[in-house]
Length: 277
Image 1 (tube, rainbow, N blue to C red):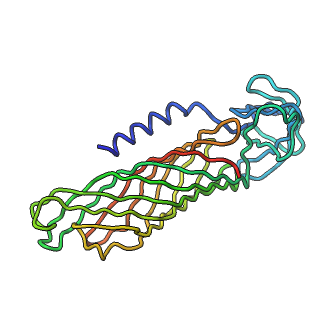
Image 2: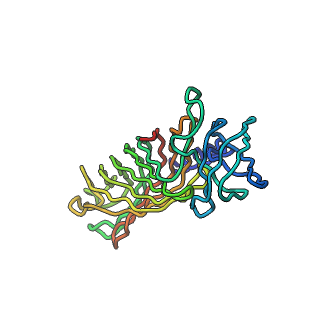
Image 3: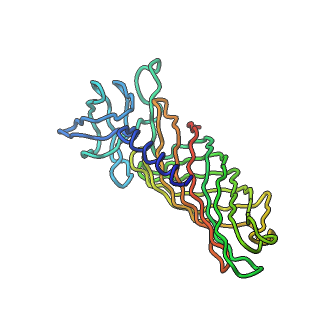
């Protein structure tokens, strides 16, 4: 029930913010001039932008000559095609007294913190009578975040912090003579995700390395709970501000390696705040 609720909330949130994008893009090219859609950036006349092709290779520079609404005209040196991305070249631009601007490009480093909730499910075969019990529950996570962008379309996200796994379920036998079986673990761990960036949306995959800080269980032997490696599929949205800082929103499906007696997975959602270092 909790996992379905979070899934619905995530879908609704993505639909709400989906119309926003914060990655400048070339809309039209004529001779040595381009028209670009700033899509949430706040470039000024005199700014110099880097031009990136679809493979993430820098292919030219553009200098802003005119700005009208969310569109701008620029002269280019190099190559440009409709759909190419543009990012502000570090140290370029005109009046620094204006508002801050978003300038996300290759080699950007961001740090932040996220908090969230997880919904977990597990099935365990009881040693006492070889019966199985299904357990579920919810937990929390608190993590530090590190983002690195290699290309406009490719990035890395690392997370490190506390994650809880807390499940229980009814049984007629086993687990101290019947009643409820449970498994409760607090992990310290790190998540390592490769991300394919689609404007402010992204999809990714990776692994999570977890180390138990505390553990208690009746469904399985506590001594069997040790370091573990999870497989992680993720998607998210980085809700950016004009300053370049953003709110990272992330949805994960995490699968524990299965054994002959236990299988488990978690679904989590988290959000926080990240800033350029």
